[in-house]
Image (tube, rainbow, N blue to C red; front, side, top):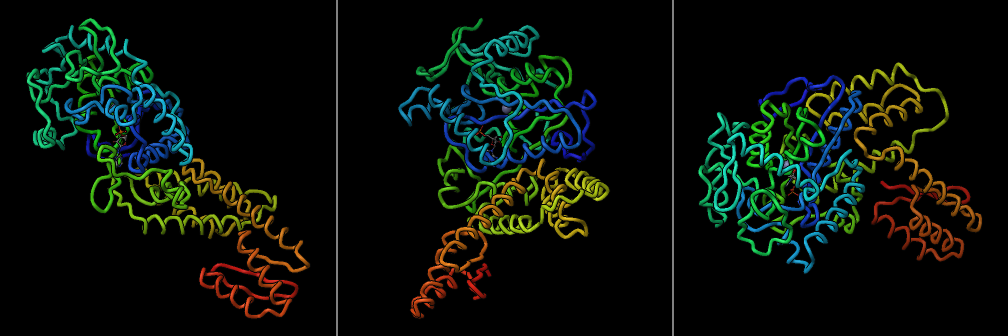
Length: 483
Ligand code: AMP
Ligand code: ZN
Protein backbone atom coordinates (compact mmCIF):
# COMPACT_ATOMS: atom_id res chain seq x y z
CA UNK A 1 0.00 0.00 0.00
CA UNK A 2 0.93 3.66 -0.26
CA UNK A 3 1.07 5.27 3.15
CA UNK A 4 1.80 8.80 4.28
CA UNK A 5 4.74 8.84 6.67
CA UNK A 6 4.78 11.73 9.14
CA UNK A 7 8.52 11.34 9.52
CA UNK A 8 9.26 12.09 5.88
CA UNK A 9 6.07 14.08 5.18
CA UNK A 10 5.60 11.96 2.06
CA UNK A 11 3.34 9.25 0.80
CA UNK A 12 5.44 6.23 -0.13
CA UNK A 13 5.11 2.47 -0.63
CA UNK A 14 4.74 0.70 2.70
CA UNK A 15 7.80 -1.44 3.41
CA UNK A 16 8.79 -3.74 6.25
CA UNK A 17 12.10 -4.76 7.75
CA UNK A 18 11.25 -8.45 7.42
CA UNK A 19 9.38 -9.26 4.19
CA UNK A 20 5.76 -10.23 4.83
CA UNK A 21 5.83 -9.30 8.52
CA UNK A 22 4.69 -6.03 10.12
CA UNK A 23 5.85 -5.02 13.56
CA UNK A 24 3.24 -2.47 14.58
CA UNK A 25 2.96 -0.42 17.76
CA UNK A 26 0.03 1.66 18.98
CA UNK A 27 0.07 4.14 21.85
CA UNK A 28 -2.69 2.90 24.12
CA UNK A 29 -5.09 4.85 26.33
CA UNK A 30 -4.32 6.60 29.59
CA UNK A 31 -6.80 4.81 31.80
CA UNK A 32 -7.88 7.54 34.21
CA UNK A 33 -11.23 8.11 32.54
CA UNK A 34 -13.46 6.72 29.80
CA UNK A 35 -12.12 6.98 26.28
CA UNK A 36 -13.95 9.71 24.38
CA UNK A 37 -15.08 9.18 20.82
CA UNK A 38 -12.12 11.30 19.65
CA UNK A 39 -9.65 8.81 21.17
CA UNK A 40 -11.70 6.08 19.56
CA UNK A 41 -11.45 7.74 16.15
CA UNK A 42 -7.70 7.09 16.38
CA UNK A 43 -8.23 3.46 17.42
CA UNK A 44 -10.82 2.87 14.68
CA UNK A 45 -8.47 4.14 11.96
CA UNK A 46 -5.53 2.15 13.36
CA UNK A 47 -7.77 -0.92 13.45
CA UNK A 48 -8.65 -0.50 9.76
CA UNK A 49 -4.96 -0.02 8.95
CA UNK A 50 -4.04 -3.25 10.74
CA UNK A 51 -6.86 -5.17 9.04
CA UNK A 52 -5.96 -3.74 5.64
CA UNK A 53 -2.36 -4.89 6.04
CA UNK A 54 -3.61 -8.36 6.95
CA UNK A 55 -5.93 -8.25 3.91
CA UNK A 56 -2.85 -7.52 1.80
CA UNK A 57 -1.37 -10.71 3.19
CA UNK A 58 0.98 -9.42 5.88
CA UNK A 59 1.51 -11.21 9.12
CA UNK A 60 1.03 -8.41 11.68
CA UNK A 61 2.28 -8.30 15.25
CA UNK A 62 0.44 -5.42 16.88
CA UNK A 63 1.47 -4.25 20.33
CA UNK A 64 -0.27 -1.70 22.54
CA UNK A 65 0.50 -0.29 25.96
CA UNK A 66 -1.98 0.74 28.62
CA UNK A 67 -0.77 3.90 30.35
CA UNK A 68 -1.44 3.30 34.02
CA UNK A 69 1.49 5.27 35.43
CA UNK A 70 3.66 8.30 34.71
CA UNK A 71 1.49 10.40 32.37
CA UNK A 72 1.37 13.93 33.72
CA UNK A 73 -1.27 16.50 32.86
CA UNK A 74 1.08 18.29 30.50
CA UNK A 75 2.62 15.85 28.04
CA UNK A 76 5.94 17.53 28.93
CA UNK A 77 6.61 16.21 32.45
CA UNK A 78 4.72 18.87 34.35
CA UNK A 79 1.36 19.13 36.03
CA UNK A 80 -0.52 16.56 37.99
CA UNK A 81 -0.29 12.79 37.46
CA UNK A 82 -3.37 11.87 35.42
CA UNK A 83 -3.92 8.54 37.20
CA UNK A 84 -3.74 10.15 40.65
CA UNK A 85 -6.19 12.77 39.57
CA UNK A 86 -8.63 10.06 38.42
CA UNK A 87 -8.22 8.08 41.64
CA UNK A 88 -8.85 11.14 43.79
CA UNK A 89 -11.89 12.10 41.75
CA UNK A 90 -13.45 8.69 42.37
CA UNK A 91 -12.10 7.93 45.85
CA UNK A 92 -10.47 4.75 44.59
CA UNK A 93 -6.93 3.43 44.32
CA UNK A 94 -4.91 4.01 41.18
CA UNK A 95 -4.97 0.29 40.35
CA UNK A 96 -8.75 0.16 40.77
CA UNK A 97 -9.13 3.11 38.43
CA UNK A 98 -6.72 1.52 35.93
CA UNK A 99 -8.59 -1.80 35.90
CA UNK A 100 -12.00 -0.20 35.63
CA UNK A 101 -11.11 2.09 32.71
CA UNK A 102 -9.05 -0.56 30.93
CA UNK A 103 -12.10 -2.84 30.95
CA UNK A 104 -14.31 0.06 29.85
CA UNK A 105 -11.90 0.81 26.99
CA UNK A 106 -12.02 -2.74 25.65
CA UNK A 107 -15.79 -2.82 26.01
CA UNK A 108 -15.96 0.34 23.84
CA UNK A 109 -13.60 -1.30 21.35
CA UNK A 110 -15.80 -4.38 21.23
CA UNK A 111 -18.86 -2.28 20.47
CA UNK A 112 -16.97 -0.50 17.70
CA UNK A 113 -15.59 -3.74 16.20
CA UNK A 114 -12.02 -2.74 17.07
CA UNK A 115 -9.88 -5.85 17.33
CA UNK A 116 -7.77 -6.28 20.47
CA UNK A 117 -4.05 -6.01 19.57
CA UNK A 118 -1.95 -9.18 19.73
CA UNK A 119 -0.12 -7.88 22.79
CA UNK A 120 -1.66 -5.50 25.34
CA UNK A 121 0.76 -4.50 28.06
CA UNK A 122 -0.02 -2.26 31.05
CA UNK A 123 2.94 0.05 31.66
CA UNK A 124 3.23 -1.05 35.30
CA UNK A 125 4.09 -4.58 34.12
CA UNK A 126 7.41 -3.73 32.45
CA UNK A 127 9.38 -1.80 35.07
CA UNK A 128 12.52 -3.96 34.64
CA UNK A 129 12.53 -3.14 30.95
CA UNK A 130 12.55 0.63 31.60
CA UNK A 131 15.27 0.30 34.23
CA UNK A 132 17.39 -1.61 31.71
CA UNK A 133 16.96 1.12 29.08
CA UNK A 134 17.51 4.02 31.48
CA UNK A 135 20.69 2.32 32.79
CA UNK A 136 21.88 1.86 29.20
CA UNK A 137 21.20 5.51 28.38
CA UNK A 138 23.13 6.64 31.49
CA UNK A 139 26.04 4.37 30.55
CA UNK A 140 26.15 5.73 27.02
CA UNK A 141 26.02 9.33 28.30
CA UNK A 142 22.57 10.12 26.89
CA UNK A 143 21.03 10.64 30.32
CA UNK A 144 21.90 12.40 33.57
CA UNK A 145 20.68 12.52 37.13
CA UNK A 146 19.50 15.80 38.63
CA UNK A 147 17.44 16.60 41.67
CA UNK A 148 16.85 12.88 42.20
CA UNK A 149 15.31 12.27 38.76
CA UNK A 150 16.90 10.81 35.63
CA UNK A 151 16.62 12.97 32.51
CA UNK A 152 17.29 12.37 28.84
CA UNK A 153 19.92 14.82 27.57
CA UNK A 154 18.52 16.12 24.28
CA UNK A 155 21.71 18.14 23.62
CA UNK A 156 23.43 14.83 22.80
CA UNK A 157 21.30 14.43 19.68
CA UNK A 158 22.09 15.82 16.27
CA UNK A 159 18.41 16.29 15.59
CA UNK A 160 15.64 16.36 18.15
CA UNK A 161 12.60 17.71 16.27
CA UNK A 162 12.44 14.71 13.96
CA UNK A 163 8.92 15.37 12.78
CA UNK A 164 10.06 18.80 11.55
CA UNK A 165 6.79 20.50 12.23
CA UNK A 166 7.35 21.49 15.82
CA UNK A 167 9.33 24.33 17.18
CA UNK A 168 10.31 25.78 20.50
CA UNK A 169 7.01 27.55 20.86
CA UNK A 170 5.29 24.20 21.34
CA UNK A 171 7.29 23.74 24.48
CA UNK A 172 5.72 26.84 25.93
CA UNK A 173 2.39 25.00 26.20
CA UNK A 174 3.08 23.93 29.77
CA UNK A 175 3.92 27.49 30.67
CA UNK A 176 0.74 28.75 29.10
CA UNK A 177 -1.21 26.29 31.22
CA UNK A 178 0.35 27.88 34.28
CA UNK A 179 2.64 24.93 35.07
CA UNK A 180 6.14 25.55 36.43
CA UNK A 181 9.21 24.64 34.40
CA UNK A 182 11.46 21.93 35.86
CA UNK A 183 14.71 23.64 36.91
CA UNK A 184 16.61 20.33 36.99
CA UNK A 185 16.55 20.13 33.20
CA UNK A 186 19.78 21.13 31.47
CA UNK A 187 18.02 21.84 28.21
CA UNK A 188 14.44 22.77 27.48
CA UNK A 189 13.85 19.60 25.45
CA UNK A 190 15.13 17.21 28.13
CA UNK A 191 12.53 14.91 29.59
CA UNK A 192 12.19 12.64 32.60
CA UNK A 193 13.06 8.96 32.17
CA UNK A 194 12.65 8.08 35.84
CA UNK A 195 11.10 10.13 38.64
CA UNK A 196 12.24 9.78 42.22
CA UNK A 197 11.87 13.30 43.55
CA UNK A 198 8.32 13.62 42.53
CA UNK A 199 6.61 16.67 43.81
CA UNK A 200 3.64 14.39 44.30
CA UNK A 201 4.40 12.85 47.63
CA UNK A 202 1.24 10.78 47.39
CA UNK A 203 2.33 9.03 44.17
CA UNK A 204 0.74 5.64 44.73
CA UNK A 205 2.86 3.36 42.59
CA UNK A 206 6.61 3.26 43.21
CA UNK A 207 9.34 0.79 42.44
CA UNK A 208 12.89 0.27 43.55
CA UNK A 209 15.51 1.37 41.02
CA UNK A 210 19.26 2.04 40.96
CA UNK A 211 18.35 5.74 41.38
CA UNK A 212 16.01 5.32 44.31
CA UNK A 213 12.37 4.43 44.76
CA UNK A 214 10.29 6.02 42.05
CA UNK A 215 8.36 5.51 38.83
CA UNK A 216 8.95 5.75 35.07
CA UNK A 217 8.24 8.74 32.85
CA UNK A 218 5.45 8.35 30.31
CA UNK A 219 7.60 8.23 27.15
CA UNK A 220 9.90 5.42 28.29
CA UNK A 221 6.98 3.02 28.63
CA UNK A 222 6.24 2.94 24.90
CA UNK A 223 9.92 2.48 23.99
CA UNK A 224 10.29 -0.26 26.61
CA UNK A 225 7.14 -2.14 25.65
CA UNK A 226 7.78 -1.89 21.92
CA UNK A 227 11.43 -2.99 22.20
CA UNK A 228 10.32 -5.93 24.30
CA UNK A 229 7.47 -7.18 22.11
CA UNK A 230 8.27 -5.80 18.62
CA UNK A 231 12.05 -6.08 18.72
CA UNK A 232 14.58 -3.44 17.65
CA UNK A 233 13.12 -2.84 14.17
CA UNK A 234 9.67 -1.32 14.27
CA UNK A 235 7.82 -0.95 10.95
CA UNK A 236 4.86 1.16 11.95
CA UNK A 237 4.12 3.33 14.96
CA UNK A 238 0.63 4.80 15.40
CA UNK A 239 -1.08 7.38 17.54
CA UNK A 240 -3.19 10.52 17.46
CA UNK A 241 -1.51 13.57 15.97
CA UNK A 242 -1.05 15.17 19.43
CA UNK A 243 1.29 12.27 20.27
CA UNK A 244 3.86 13.32 17.64
CA UNK A 245 5.28 15.94 19.94
CA UNK A 246 6.63 15.55 22.54
CA UNK A 247 5.69 11.89 23.09
CA UNK A 248 6.84 10.28 19.84
CA UNK A 249 9.73 12.69 19.47
CA UNK A 250 10.98 11.55 22.88
CA UNK A 251 10.31 7.88 22.13
CA UNK A 252 12.54 8.15 19.05
CA UNK A 253 15.25 10.05 20.96
CA UNK A 254 15.58 7.47 23.71
CA UNK A 255 14.98 4.31 21.63
CA UNK A 256 17.54 5.15 18.94
CA UNK A 257 20.12 6.35 21.48
CA UNK A 258 19.68 3.10 23.38
CA UNK A 259 19.76 0.64 20.47
CA UNK A 260 22.27 2.63 18.41
CA UNK A 261 20.46 2.44 15.05
CA UNK A 262 17.28 3.77 13.42
CA UNK A 263 14.21 2.36 15.12
CA UNK A 264 10.86 2.95 13.43
CA UNK A 265 10.71 4.00 9.81
CA UNK A 266 6.96 4.67 9.33
CA UNK A 267 4.79 6.89 11.52
CA UNK A 268 1.01 7.01 11.22
CA UNK A 269 -0.81 9.87 12.91
CA UNK A 270 -4.58 10.21 13.03
CA UNK A 271 -5.91 13.75 13.06
CA UNK A 272 -8.31 14.90 15.69
CA UNK A 273 -12.00 14.65 16.13
CA UNK A 274 -13.11 18.14 17.02
CA UNK A 275 -16.33 19.51 18.33
CA UNK A 276 -17.66 22.72 16.86
CA UNK A 277 -15.91 24.51 19.76
CA UNK A 278 -12.49 22.83 19.39
CA UNK A 279 -10.56 19.65 20.15
CA UNK A 280 -12.35 16.96 22.11
CA UNK A 281 -10.22 16.35 25.17
CA UNK A 282 -10.38 14.02 28.15
CA UNK A 283 -8.68 16.37 30.56
CA UNK A 284 -11.20 19.13 29.88
CA UNK A 285 -13.90 16.73 31.02
CA UNK A 286 -16.25 17.67 28.17
CA UNK A 287 -16.36 14.60 26.03
CA UNK A 288 -18.67 12.10 24.44
CA UNK A 289 -18.48 8.38 25.07
CA UNK A 290 -19.75 5.35 23.15
CA UNK A 291 -22.18 4.69 26.00
CA UNK A 292 -23.63 8.17 25.64
CA UNK A 293 -24.14 7.61 21.91
CA UNK A 294 -25.95 4.37 22.71
CA UNK A 295 -28.10 6.04 25.35
CA UNK A 296 -29.17 8.53 22.71
CA UNK A 297 -30.21 5.67 20.43
CA UNK A 298 -27.20 5.51 18.10
CA UNK A 299 -25.66 2.27 16.96
CA UNK A 300 -21.90 2.48 17.81
CA UNK A 301 -21.21 1.18 14.31
CA UNK A 302 -22.87 4.30 12.88
CA UNK A 303 -20.03 6.18 14.55
CA UNK A 304 -17.50 3.81 12.99
CA UNK A 305 -19.20 4.40 9.61
CA UNK A 306 -19.00 8.17 10.25
CA UNK A 307 -15.25 7.91 10.89
CA UNK A 308 -14.63 5.75 7.82
CA UNK A 309 -16.40 8.28 5.60
CA UNK A 310 -13.54 10.74 6.08
CA UNK A 311 -9.77 10.57 5.69
CA UNK A 312 -7.63 9.99 8.78
CA UNK A 313 -5.31 12.90 7.89
CA UNK A 314 -8.10 15.45 8.03
CA UNK A 315 -9.59 16.83 11.21
CA UNK A 316 -13.16 15.59 11.58
CA UNK A 317 -15.89 17.73 13.09
CA UNK A 318 -18.42 15.94 15.21
CA UNK A 319 -21.99 17.19 15.38
CA UNK A 320 -25.23 15.37 16.06
CA UNK A 321 -26.42 16.32 12.61
CA UNK A 322 -23.34 14.72 11.03
CA UNK A 323 -23.86 11.58 13.09
CA UNK A 324 -27.56 11.47 12.14
CA UNK A 325 -26.59 11.61 8.47
CA UNK A 326 -24.05 8.81 8.94
CA UNK A 327 -26.55 6.69 10.84
CA UNK A 328 -29.19 7.20 8.12
CA UNK A 329 -26.73 6.24 5.37
CA UNK A 330 -25.51 3.22 7.33
CA UNK A 331 -29.07 1.95 7.89
CA UNK A 332 -29.97 2.39 4.24
CA UNK A 333 -26.85 0.49 3.25
CA UNK A 334 -27.80 -2.39 5.55
CA UNK A 335 -31.35 -2.41 4.15
CA UNK A 336 -29.96 -2.70 0.61
CA UNK A 337 -27.74 -5.59 1.62
CA UNK A 338 -30.68 -7.25 3.41
CA UNK A 339 -32.58 -7.15 0.12
CA UNK A 340 -29.95 -9.33 -1.61
CA UNK A 341 -31.01 -12.94 -2.02
CA UNK A 342 -28.91 -15.66 -0.46
CA UNK A 343 -29.97 -18.13 -3.12
CA UNK A 344 -26.96 -20.44 -2.87
CA UNK A 345 -25.84 -19.68 -6.43
CA UNK A 346 -22.13 -19.86 -7.17
CA UNK A 347 -19.87 -16.90 -6.62
CA UNK A 348 -18.28 -15.44 -9.76
CA UNK A 349 -14.61 -15.59 -8.75
CA UNK A 350 -13.49 -13.35 -11.63
CA UNK A 351 -15.74 -10.52 -10.47
CA UNK A 352 -14.74 -11.11 -6.89
CA UNK A 353 -11.04 -10.79 -7.76
CA UNK A 354 -11.69 -7.72 -9.85
CA UNK A 355 -13.29 -5.98 -6.85
CA UNK A 356 -10.58 -7.21 -4.53
CA UNK A 357 -8.01 -5.49 -6.77
CA UNK A 358 -10.09 -2.29 -6.78
CA UNK A 359 -10.29 -2.34 -2.98
CA UNK A 360 -6.56 -2.96 -2.61
CA UNK A 361 -5.73 -0.10 -4.97
CA UNK A 362 -8.25 2.41 -3.68
CA UNK A 363 -8.16 1.84 0.07
CA UNK A 364 -4.44 1.14 -0.29
CA UNK A 365 -3.98 4.73 -1.40
CA UNK A 366 -3.09 6.11 2.03
CA UNK A 367 -5.92 4.27 3.75
CA UNK A 368 -8.69 5.94 1.81
CA UNK A 369 -11.56 4.46 3.77
CA UNK A 370 -14.19 6.66 2.16
CA UNK A 371 -13.28 5.04 -1.18
CA UNK A 372 -13.81 1.71 0.58
CA UNK A 373 -17.35 2.82 1.45
CA UNK A 374 -17.97 4.04 -2.10
CA UNK A 375 -16.91 0.62 -3.37
CA UNK A 376 -19.62 -0.99 -1.22
CA UNK A 377 -22.24 0.93 -3.22
CA UNK A 378 -20.47 0.00 -6.48
CA UNK A 379 -20.75 -3.66 -5.51
CA UNK A 380 -24.48 -3.28 -4.84
CA UNK A 381 -24.92 -1.78 -8.32
CA UNK A 382 -22.66 -4.30 -10.09
CA UNK A 383 -24.01 -6.56 -12.83
CA UNK A 384 -23.42 -9.84 -11.06
CA UNK A 385 -25.29 -12.34 -8.91
CA UNK A 386 -26.43 -11.53 -5.38
CA UNK A 387 -24.27 -14.39 -4.11
CA UNK A 388 -21.21 -12.75 -5.67
CA UNK A 389 -22.14 -9.37 -4.22
CA UNK A 390 -22.53 -10.87 -0.76
CA UNK A 391 -19.16 -12.61 -1.03
CA UNK A 392 -17.42 -9.35 -2.04
CA UNK A 393 -19.13 -7.36 0.70
CA UNK A 394 -18.02 -9.97 3.21
CA UNK A 395 -14.42 -9.65 1.96
CA UNK A 396 -14.43 -5.87 2.29
CA UNK A 397 -16.06 -6.02 5.68
CA UNK A 398 -13.13 -8.06 6.94
CA UNK A 399 -11.29 -4.71 6.78
CA UNK A 400 -14.04 -2.14 7.35
CA UNK A 401 -15.71 -4.14 10.15
CA UNK A 402 -19.16 -2.65 9.84
CA UNK A 403 -20.92 -5.99 10.55
CA UNK A 404 -22.65 -5.59 7.19
CA UNK A 405 -23.75 -9.17 6.64
CA UNK A 406 -24.63 -9.83 10.28
CA UNK A 407 -26.79 -6.68 10.47
CA UNK A 408 -28.45 -7.49 7.14
CA UNK A 409 -29.19 -11.06 8.29
CA UNK A 410 -30.60 -9.73 11.57
CA UNK A 411 -32.81 -7.31 9.67
CA UNK A 412 -34.08 -10.10 7.43
CA UNK A 413 -34.77 -12.32 10.44
CA UNK A 414 -36.58 -9.50 12.22
CA UNK A 415 -38.72 -8.83 9.16
CA UNK A 416 -39.53 -12.53 8.82
CA UNK A 417 -40.42 -12.79 12.52
CA UNK A 418 -42.61 -9.68 12.35
CA UNK A 419 -44.37 -11.04 9.29
CA UNK A 420 -44.97 -14.40 10.94
CA UNK A 421 -46.34 -12.69 14.06
CA UNK A 422 -48.68 -10.51 12.05
CA UNK A 423 -50.05 -13.40 10.02
CA UNK A 424 -51.35 -15.09 13.13
CA UNK A 425 -53.61 -12.15 14.04
CA UNK A 426 -57.09 -12.88 12.84
CA UNK A 427 -56.19 -13.55 9.24
CA UNK A 428 -55.09 -9.92 8.74
CA UNK A 429 -51.54 -9.80 7.39
CA UNK A 430 -49.22 -6.89 7.96
CA UNK A 431 -46.06 -6.74 5.89
CA UNK A 432 -43.55 -4.06 6.73
CA UNK A 433 -39.88 -3.37 7.21
CA UNK A 434 -39.30 -5.45 10.31
CA UNK A 435 -40.48 -3.25 13.16
CA UNK A 436 -42.81 -5.10 15.52
CA UNK A 437 -44.13 -1.90 17.18
CA UNK A 438 -45.23 -0.47 13.83
CA UNK A 439 -46.69 -3.81 12.77
CA UNK A 440 -48.80 -3.76 15.93
CA UNK A 441 -50.13 -0.28 15.14
CA UNK A 442 -50.99 -1.23 11.57
CA UNK A 443 -52.70 -4.31 12.92
CA UNK A 444 -54.70 -2.18 15.37
CA UNK A 445 -55.77 -0.01 12.45
CA UNK A 446 -56.96 -3.09 10.60
CA UNK A 447 -59.02 -4.15 13.61
CA UNK A 448 -60.50 -0.66 13.96
CA UNK A 449 -61.54 -0.75 10.32
CA UNK A 450 -63.12 -4.17 10.77
CA UNK A 451 -65.11 -2.74 13.69
CA UNK A 452 -66.10 0.22 11.48
CA UNK A 453 -64.30 2.59 13.85
CA UNK A 454 -62.97 4.70 10.98
CA UNK A 455 -62.04 7.66 13.18
CA UNK A 456 -59.61 5.43 15.12
CA UNK A 457 -58.30 3.87 11.90
CA UNK A 458 -57.61 7.33 10.45
CA UNK A 459 -56.01 8.50 13.69
CA UNK A 460 -53.53 5.61 13.55
CA UNK A 461 -52.83 6.21 9.88
CA UNK A 462 -52.12 9.91 10.57
CA UNK A 463 -49.93 9.12 13.54
CA UNK A 464 -47.82 6.76 11.45
CA UNK A 465 -47.73 9.21 8.56
CA UNK A 466 -46.24 11.80 10.91
CA UNK A 467 -43.43 9.29 11.55
CA UNK A 468 -42.82 8.92 7.82
CA UNK A 469 -44.68 5.64 7.45
CA UNK A 470 -47.05 4.98 4.60
CA UNK A 471 -49.73 2.25 4.70
CA UNK A 472 -51.21 0.60 1.64
CA UNK A 473 -54.26 -1.63 1.98
CA UNK A 474 -53.97 -4.93 0.13
CA UNK A 475 -56.34 -7.92 0.00
CA UNK A 476 -56.35 -9.55 3.44
CA UNK A 477 -54.18 -6.96 5.16
CA UNK A 478 -51.84 -4.00 4.76
CA UNK A 479 -48.29 -3.25 3.70
CA UNK A 480 -46.31 -0.42 5.28
CA UNK A 481 -43.06 1.24 4.30
CA UNK A 482 -40.90 4.15 5.34
CA UNK A 483 -41.00 6.99 2.83
P1 AMP B 1 -4.85 9.20 25.83
O1 AMP B 1 -5.80 8.23 26.44
O2 AMP B 1 -5.10 10.62 26.23
O3 AMP B 1 -3.41 8.78 26.07
O4 AMP B 1 -5.11 9.17 24.26
C1 AMP B 1 -5.33 7.99 23.53
C2 AMP B 1 -5.19 8.23 22.04
O5 AMP B 1 -6.19 9.13 21.55
C3 AMP B 1 -3.86 8.85 21.64
O6 AMP B 1 -3.38 8.20 20.48
C4 AMP B 1 -4.21 10.30 21.34
O7 AMP B 1 -3.30 10.87 20.44
C5 AMP B 1 -5.59 10.14 20.74
N1 AMP B 1 -6.45 11.34 20.82
C6 AMP B 1 -6.58 12.22 21.83
N2 AMP B 1 -7.50 13.16 21.57
C7 AMP B 1 -7.99 12.88 20.33
C8 AMP B 1 -8.99 13.49 19.47
N3 AMP B 1 -9.70 14.55 19.85
N4 AMP B 1 -9.20 12.93 18.26
C9 AMP B 1 -8.51 11.82 17.86
N5 AMP B 1 -7.58 11.21 18.62
C10 AMP B 1 -7.31 11.72 19.84
ZN1 ZN C 1 3.23 5.99 23.30
